[in-house]
Length: 101
Image (tube, rainbow, N blue to C red; front, side, top):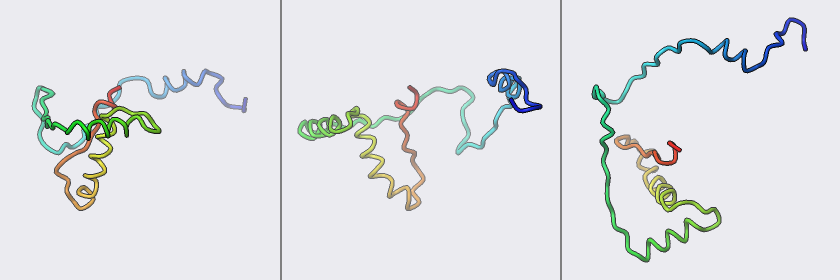
């Protein structure tokens, strides 16, 4: 151990440095938020032809088996990215299901 260094456990050192009350981080938002969070959102339903669904499922189970949801999300993001690059900032493409697990 180098002279002058504390021999305490690194976890204890981090707890000492980072412990205590954390400040509230106030970030600007894109619009005013309601006082009570409702989790209301929008859904778009779309029926795909059976043959297309089967092809997409086969694509999903190809070299890297992923869910159909992830395959469709990747396709959607690929199609929407050029719009986003051209300045269309009126929609957000997120994957809440895979980020909350």
